[in-house]
Length: 195
Figure 1 (cartoon, rainbow, N blue to C red):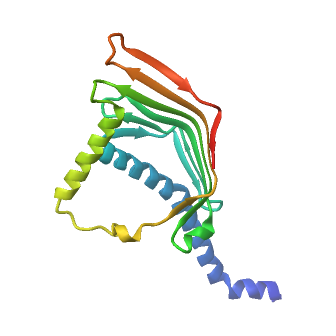
Figure 2: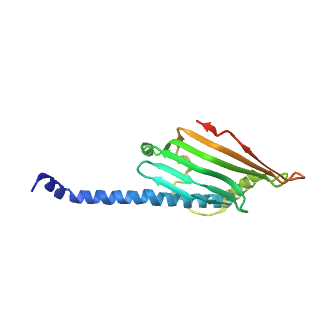
Figure 3: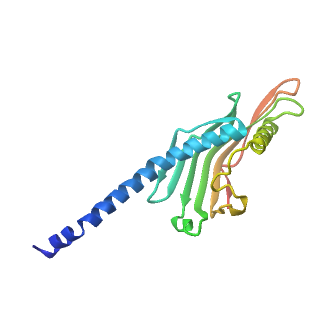
């Protein structure tokens, strides 16, 4: 028996466990994390802002720590557009997970459409979102739910973004208060932010 054959025979159990671990890590990274992001984002927006959200696709590579969302669409409960970036790219730095902080080497958002509407003198898109958030906070304060893991405000996980850039920003404004309702779109510079 050659040394290579004896080595493989001696360490075959280790190789099997390594292959199983790698397969589980790949499944968790490629499928579970993307599903978790979609479901948590949808639930969070629905509960806190009474908004609907949809994605064309969510992708995460657990080996390169590259994260991408395509065609993210947030609408109000009455199905009015609120926020629509075409793409969100996020590069994590895996070494940053060790000291329990999230460090991103780059966050890039492209083709952002933001919608603002004024329905009355005192009611607009922002006031509606604030009221929804405040009513959720009031419901949370009144509920007798048990504290969940990770809800201790003294242990907030720090998030650091080294490079933030965005391009293609469009602000859509509608005003129903004026005697003649108006709608306009303000398009800002192609690349308006880089930090």
